[in-house]
Image 1 (cartoon, helix red, strand yellow):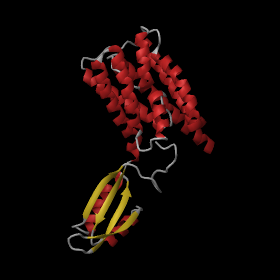
Image 2 (image 1 turned 45 degrees about the vertical axis):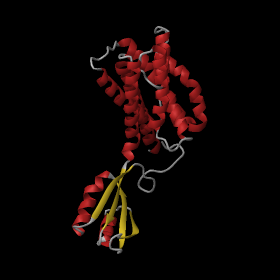
Image 3 (image 1 turned 90 degrees about the vertical axis):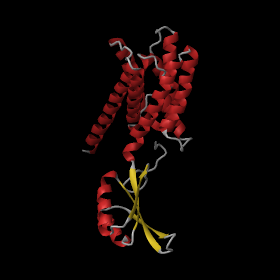
Length: 292
């Protein structure tokens, strides 16, 4: 039974990767290539090679060939499972980019800014979904994932953006198409933000800091909701009175119930809620070297 459920999970993961590759190929052909926007990463490099060769070198095929050395380099760090997912994603996205370009001719849209925005959003969504399933289209994303082991303080989206900007700059210098390069930069910035939202957004949590004379009663109420609560010792700066400060990390869907419970017990409660971008521990995420 476990092996069957595991098989369904693997099929689902690869289905998501395949759909993401389709979205990636559509975004490239419809918004970047059709409008001659510079794209980052290996796809951007292959864009340059494709134009220099007069279309003789297909973008997708060139992406696949350039990625092979990087896949082998990533094997030692990521292992067989991640390698297979990445190899599948690179193969699928490369084939879909070339196939989609052959079966349908995309024309530039009248409003290049809209193309830039939508291209960046779709690109970020596709890459974020692939990275959540431990896959990448190679190039920038695979290199960024490997660099993440070294630069832990930088997000995946930020690392991708740094690499992409270098490639877009090369595109501008080679073809002297500054407008296409500038639109490409905007799209890459949007893509990196969307990618980070897709990767990290779903694990966001809230942090509540509650100061009240009814701290004990509020604590019991929160414990009854099966929430983790920590009591901190505090002191009022103006009065000098000792106070208990309640700290509670919870998911978004608990916020209304927590507010209601606290204000019901103390109408003058002091309540602070802020975003907790990443939470590690029981009920939340776990740390590993492969964490994004």
